[in-house]
Image (cartoon, rainbow, N blue to C red; front, side):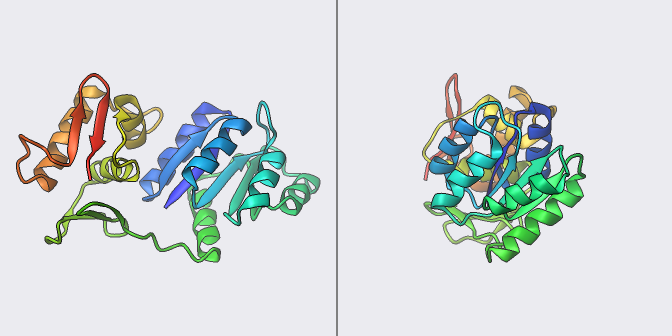
Length: 223
């Protein structure tokens, strides 16, 4: 399940993304309206969490543009809890409205409710080639073999690689996705994590077929 988070507060953007990843969702982000619209078009997320106050195109306008072409659920965030703003957002096509500050628990409950309403709450397995990831059970299977259970870090790593199969993902993006915006991840920890994941999915971890290293850049999942 892919969720686009749009906010110009980088710290809050990272915290929301981390909470979503902890709950098993794939979080992608943008910090201004123009980038949000381009990312939406490219990624086709299942839900959008959208801040009202953005530096270029405001959230109301971004919401209107998305709604003109898609029924994707939209949750709007704002520091203003006045009825006028809520009405404007909902009339503009938003499905829900959440005032800041909020707890991660409240946010996740609202996300689940929106996804249920859109009848896409049950995540479909992510797959590429003969690799398949069961998102709900946090397990991976290779070539029809018995599924193997993953740790939370292994799960977030392969989830991001599968969602971008065939594309090289820079080390910094992987560490941010796995450990969060203000997490403790670094290149060495990522290298160790990739090693552990290869032990579970590769026939010969010393000569990986799936998770390959792209020298000087990062990693790629080959389907």
